[in-house]
Amino acid sequence: MNIEHLNLFIRIAATHNISLAGNELRLSPAVASAHINKLEAGLGVRLIHRTTRKVSLTEEGKAFLPYAEDVISSVEAARASVGAGNALPIGTLRVAAPASFGRMHVLPALSNFLSLYPELHVDLKLSDTIVDLVEGGFDIAIRNSQLKDSSLIARKLAIDTRILCASPAYLEKHGIPNSPEQLNSHQCITLMGLDTWAFHTPKGPINVKAKGNFRTDNGEAVRDVCINGMGITISSKWSVYQQLQSGELVQILADYPLVNDTAIWAVYPSSRLLAPKVRAFIDYFTEYFGEIPYWEQHP
View 1 (cartoon, rainbow, N blue to C red):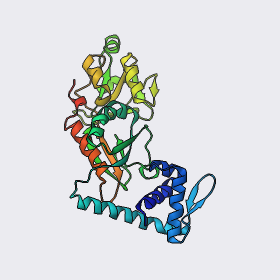
View 2 (spheres, helix red, strand yellow):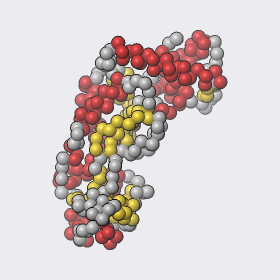
View 3 (cartoon, helix red, strand yellow):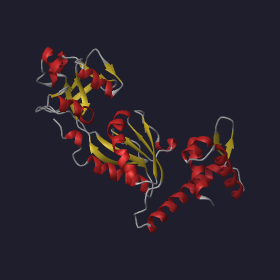
C-alpha cells in the first residue's frame, strides 16, 4: 500500500476536493486522481463519491479513514525512531499566522530558518481568521488567543504584553489620564468586540467601557490612528515597540497594568508524534523570540 496514496486520501477526506488535496501535496489533478484510482483498485472498493463540484467519502471510505491515519502515524513514528529523534525536516510545512504578527515577526525570520533546512518548503497563510488546521491542511498555526479546541496542542512561543498608549500630540491636547476611571473623559480607539478594558488596581480589578468615535477590526489600523492623535488605545508591544522607541507613541497608566493572559502560541493537531518539520519550526521560533522577546526590551 503506497504511503503517498494514503496521505492523499486523508487530505481528500478533509478538503472534499481532489485537486485541492493534490495541490497541497504538490500533485497535479490528473496525478492525484490516478493515485486514488490505484488505491481503490488495490483495495477493491470505492472510497469516494465523485461529483463535478466536490467529493465525499463512501461508507467504505469512512470506515477506512481512521486506519489510514493510523498507518501514517505509525510510519512517521518509525522514521523518527530510526533517526533517534533527529530526522531532518523535509517536504512542505503549511503555516497559518495572524496577518500583522506574521508580516512583522515571522517573515523576517524565515530566510534563516529555510537556510537551515534546505529540503523544507514553507506555505504561509497570513490571515486574522482562525483557521481550521485539519480541514485546511495546516501543520501548525500561530495564535495570540487561548486554545479552546481540545483536539489541538499549544506550545508557548513568546509573551504578549498589552499596554495602553497614545501619541504625545493627543496627550498634550487632552491631558494624561491618571487612573482607569479617567478614561471615560477621553477618546478611546477600540477593536470591534473588544471595548471592555480590564485593569489591575490596588483595590482589585476594575472594568472600563472604552468609548470613542472610531473603532476598527484591524490592529494595525488601531495603531496607526493612535499615532495620528485620534485617541488612546490598547496594543500589544510586538505591534508598537518601534513607535515606543521612536517616541511616536508613549505608554500611559503603567501603574495600572491590564488584566491580560495572552501569549503567542504555536498550535498543531494532536497526534502521537510531533513531525520533525513542526518540531523544527517550534524550536527555531522559541529560540528566535527568546525568553524576553526583542519587542519587550524597548520602553
